[in-house]
Length: 288
Ligand SMILES: NC(=O)c1ccc[n+]([C@@H]2O[C@H](COP(=O)([O-])OP(=O)(O)OC[C@H]3O[C@@H](n4cnc5c(N)ncnc54)[C@H](OP(=O)(O)O)[C@@H]3O)[C@@H](O)[C@H]2O)c1
Image (cartoon, rainbow, N blue to C red):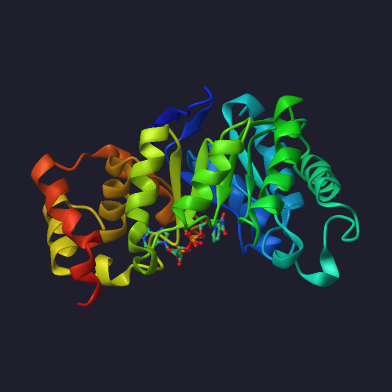
C-alpha cells in the first residue's frame, strides 16, 4: 500500500497531501468513503449542502472505520458552510431567515451532528459573498467556531480574485489556512493567487483537476512522460500537482483509481520533467 504523506499547515494542523471528495455520491456515500479510507485515504472533504453532499452518510462511514481501528484523530475531516445561494431552496440545512452569523452556527451544528464528531479539522467558506462585508460577517462566525475548538483551521473556496482573498486575510483574526479552487484554464490556473498563497503559507487545494483538463491529460507531452514513468496520465498529473505544492481532491468511485491516485506518492518526477510540464499551465497552451 502507498504511504500517504501529510503536510503541516500554517496553523499547525496536519493534512494529507491528497483528499477524498464526497460530492455527488448520494446513497453510495457511506460505502465509497469507507472504501477510500480502507484503501489508505485519510483526508475527507464534504459540505453541509444536501444538494451535492450527503454529510450524514460521511458520518456513517467514519463510524464504520473507527470501529475497524482507524481512530478519529488519524483522520483529517473538512466541511463547508454554504450560503443560501448555493443551497437547494427545498433543503436548506439552517433557518434561512436567521441572520448570517446564526446560519453559520446552525450549519456547523448540523455538520457536527451529521459527521458524529465534536470537531472538524477544517471549516471552509464555500464561496465568497457578493460583498466583502458579508464575506467578513460569515468569516467572523467561522472564527468563533475555530476559537472555541469546533474547527482546527479555516479556509475559503471558489475564491478566484486575489484582491478578495487579500481583503479577507487583511481583516481576518484567524487567517485562512487553505484555499480550495477549481483548477482550470479559465482562471489561468490561479498562478498569481497560488504564488501569493505560497508566500503566506496558505495551502492550495484543487478540484476538477482531471475533469477540467483533458487537453493536458491527452497531450503528447503528458502521455509520453506517463509511458516513460510507467504511470497513467492521471497519476502523472496528480504527481505534478503534488510537486507544485498543491493538495488535490479526488472523488473517484473506482477502487482501481483510488489505488492509482494514492500511487502518485510512489514516484517522483525528475526536475527536468517537472519543468517541462510547467508549459502545460501556460496561456499559449490554452489555444491548442
Ligand atoms: N469547493 C467546491 O465548490 C467543490 C466543487 C466541486 C468538487 N469539490 C470537491 O472536490 C471533490 C472532487 O471533485 P472533482 O470535481 O475534482 O472530480 P471527481 O469527482 O474527483 O471526478 C474526477 C473524475 O476523474 C476520474 N478519476 C479519478 N481518479 C482517476 C484516475 N486515477 N484515472 C482516471 N480517472 C480518474 C473519476 O472517474 P472514476 O470515478 O471512474 O474514477 C471522475 O470521473 C468533490 O468530491 C468535492 O469534495 C468541491
